[in-house]
Image: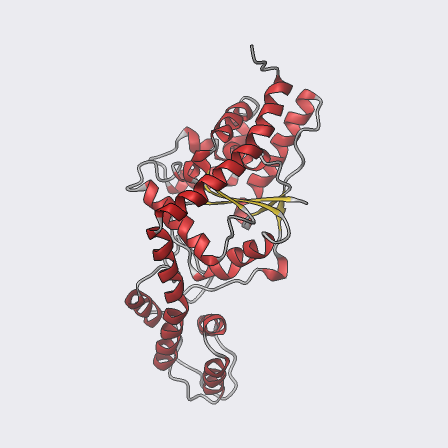
Length: 329
């Protein structure tokens, strides 16, 4: 069975784009693959070195993924900082990572432009830590966005470099996992592009109902159709795409017909969409609150994930130490 690994930063809640996109695919993948899903709290420090409440952030995102359907009995769900073997492999890989190649990575160049006041060593070696995350479990498939594919290529480079340097076949090649047609792209509320945390155009699973209503009512529209069966502009297509995933078929049909015959009222459409999003997200919010309140269950989940992740990681690290020449006295 192939091993799949994916990391989750504890720096923002899940929005509808995450849920209908990657998370739904993770839920399917845990039935077919040996999956490792981890909360990347070390990674988060590269851009948020002084988080206000790191532990609460980790707890929140852990509860959200559990509420969405990640099953800790089927997948290994763990917190990165609970697995110290990753840090040791990161150290060892850094001995064979070169400053020049790290400085040329797209993510590093993007980050030094966006946070010139905080160009830290962790930011430079971010791809090395990501490589350690991946290859310590000998993962062969890594679900990532287009902007992260270069980091998977770097992980593959370090895996091959280690194998070549020591004349071994320790690490398999990791590759980006392509969801293809299965990845649903949910648009944002700003009239273009996809829903994202950094763009401020998202609606979150854990969000106050009034906040959702205000966001949706501010969503970008146009001046309305001028003739029957007009082609929808991108902002209107985006609203209908959202309606397709949260509203009933009758609701979707009603507003589709209203648009086609030029009787649509965008205010009514957005009010209905807002209420449908609230109805969709409320059960998730309630479940997330219940999970966060159950400290015994959360500890059980974290302990189980840590045990499984460390068993896998320590086996690989023992092999690596032996290959390099570290011997127990």
